[in-house]
Length: 491
Image (cartoon, rainbow, N blue to C red; front, side):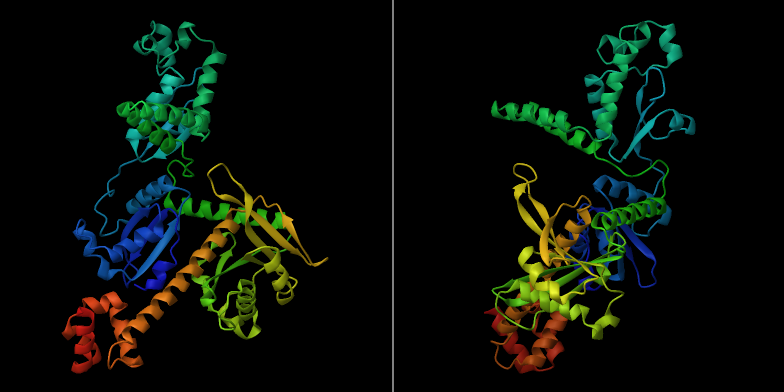
């Protein structure tokens, strides 16, 4: 496994797949944060999962699929495990299906139910929500919603033959078939449930959060805890899930890709571009100009292409000047001499900066490349939240930088965040490397060749510190220098 491959993984939810040297699937897992989760396999001792520890030496390649949220990751993971049956997955190999909430919207008096299997006839007569991997949360919220918006669960035939059911007497059924509620009022209850299941739940959760704080102030912690659990369930169940009933993993991935391409086309239309196939985003990381790096991250047809990322070590100056560092990196990237290193030229260049940066860069970028900047504005998205992003573009006709309102901005924000992360990553690596070099250089007898050999085998200072005298000497084949190193770190 290459360390660089781990560093390129996204900080997003999704599913990861481990492959061996023969490209055979070993393991499939889910993650709220793909990079952190996958890296943990190579950092932790994994004593709690010995069967996974056995697998680590065989991992040669990693593939990830991003999802919109953690719940979609759970569902996609399950679908993939059932389809591919990886050797090291001990769970979820059975035919376990997830819970769905079904609302028979076309009935006169619609009902709501939790089910693992829905017939085609039912699908035509109603709406389906889910799937929900945590069926316990689904059932708790189902009960809670029924208390707020009562509905009937009896079949029409049975309800019309019999008197009010038990649920009517405990307030969970409004008795529509016995005339206790009009069809219009009953439909209003169902519509409120549909709103919640479609994600419009903020008001209800805010109300519960306010009640929970009141309980906490009065030190009624048990009641506050119950409301906390209820809020977690509501947020979980109200999460928008873009996964359809009986959908395979391939269908989900293909549909998600199509959606990303559609968003990319919308951005092209919004910016008034003739063509938009590739976006490149640049950022700078340095401390007072030292160990300066520029990062380049890429999106093509809506997808972030981590294999296309590049890093530029800034050579022209070592004083803080982000604008000229950006100019150096982009000029080097667009140099025709280096064209074979890249798949194609960008149609749009995005930089982490505003008016000043765009003004400096304008004359160094071909006119057929759209130049866009992104900065943090002065207004907050909401109180206590992050600052709203503002966009700036270079108007080539009047040579002025103008502010631009962009609706389809999510991908652009993701690219800026990725460029920032990638630049900082390499800046920190350089600082650590320089610190390690200076530390090793203090040891008598250690020259550049010895230092390179040591860091190649032991990776870093900590690795050298943990090594035995014999292990160090095996690398250097010089007992005297090996002893100096071993004794230096023991002191």
